[in-house]
Amino acid sequence: MSTRQLRNFVNGQPTDASNGETIDVINPSTGEVFATSPRSGEVDVGAACNAAATAFETWRDTTPSDRQRALLRFADLVEAHAEELVALEVENTGKPIALTSSEELPPMLDQIRFFAGAARVLDGSSAGEYLAGHTSWIRREPIGVCAQVTPWNYPMMMAIWKIAPALAAGNTVVLKPSDTTPVSTLRLAELAAEVFPDGVLNVICGDRTTGQALVSNKTPKMVSITGSVRAGREVMTTAAADLKNIHLELGGKAPVLVFDDADLEAAAEAIAIAGYFNGGQDCTAATRVIAGPGIHDELAAALAEHARNTTTAPPTVADADYGPLNSLPHLERVSGFVDRVPDHAQVLAGGERLGDAGYFYAPTVVGGLRQEDELVQQEIFGPVITIQRFTDEDEALAWANGVEYGLASSVFTTDHARALRVSRRLDFGCVWINTHIPLVAEMPHGGFGHSGTGKDLSKYGFEDYTRIKHVMSAF
Image 1: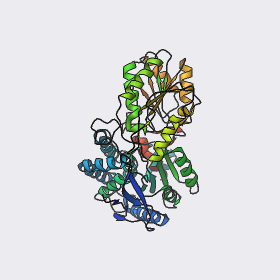
Image 2 (image 1 turned 180 degrees about the horizontal axis):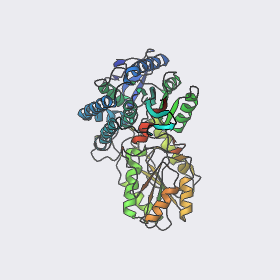
Image 3 (image 1 turned 45 degrees about the vertical axis):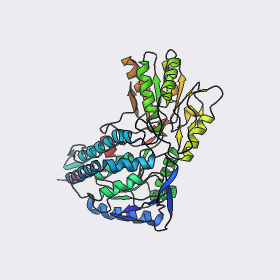
Image 4 (image 1 turned 90 degrees about the vertical axis):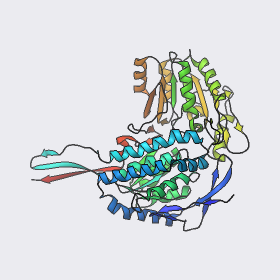
């Protein structure tokens, strides 16, 4: 089987890295190399940034309706190539074909079309005479060239989350996908070139040093990254040298508070779906369950049963619930957490690698954990659900908030007053009530603390890609 050679996409054209270096791209379902991608260096980053800067001089002056039409045409192209894009994503990530088609592609299309509409409805303070003899008004303007870095867990969808609002606001983009999952993003760039002028969207491949070169380049005025806390810290440090705008969507450790009056079966099913979706490789995954004393034991047993009935398999298995983990190092990281389970805890289900080919890990449930245990405190980013038993509402909230992350959370209860009370006290950017993980384009996604700063999706995510200018005129 021949190895595919991927190329950067800069200024409307595929290009190779100037240094000739490449990175192996591995299919995590098989563990085999199926492609190589460029290991771009500073020269390649500079060329992409220069192309984006040149394109910005004209793209910034397009009207909102122009940008809307372009984004709508882009969405139509993505939809027309849906089967191809899903196939590329599946080959590169090992995700189930059916779930990728039904759960990822439709939201992507909706999000492009949402931001296409948002381009025409930016609002702000009304113009007025706040000083005698002077009229003031507010302009919302594009920031400039945006440097963007996307993760490997949802490579295609996260590219859309970044590209769509940035271009809708009149910015241009240089995007670096993860070194393990560049395939679908490069194809998106090729499709975008059929709609947008050259240089408006550029994609460069590479490793961590490529990302550092992009963030440190003088041209981008904004840096947006979805990734680990470590990566976020590095971006903040590097971007500080030029005081660039930063937008960080980092890790999560979502608590799921299940009170004794909750619907046991509904809660267990929702947690299993949200905990194992994409193999738990989701910063909002429902993997930290905190259960009331009266429901804990039955819930733990129900979650273990759900784990045993959850299927992880290659993409071609029609009823697979999730596929492999991203890479061998990540598989070793996830299994290491479970291998280090403390003596006072118990593995209730799973806890082992499945097979020798690919990077599959069994759906896992761990009980008996204490608040200070690393399985509770650290983001596992795998198909591992933990469960703790709380004694009262205050303890449940203290445990829920007792981590460094603040991205997403949920509460399961039939007591409406409690749901409202708890949602107010949960220190997370999103709180779901009697559900977990649904997202919509109209509502913001983003967290507090070590989960980052800024919002994706919604008008708030769109506004993050604009700058505010006050104009005053004497009369």
